[in-house]
Image (cartoon, rainbow, N blue to C red; front, side, top):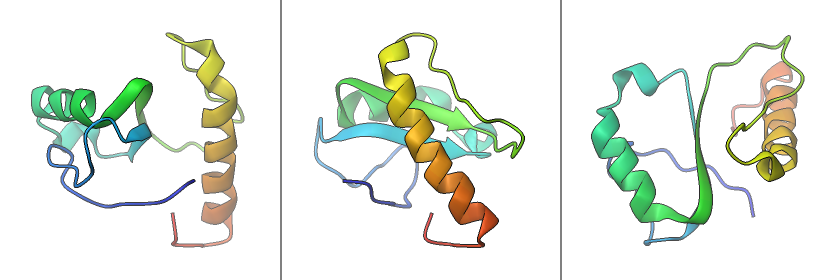
Length: 92
């Protein structure tokens, strides 16, 4: 299931080990990174991914170097985000 939740990056309102993917766009420079990493460890399922992305509409493929098995899921999600962005869909 794909859903969007907006919250403080260091206080994500979900249960422990309940999220597979956390994505932040163009915001990481504002984060207290040690707190964000700690929160990510709390909420991510084992093998979950935290990704900080900057959008570049010319990029067609996103790569997760540490675990290439995640690339397909990340590219599917980012394709949905790119299409929504091009259509001015604010649900993402």
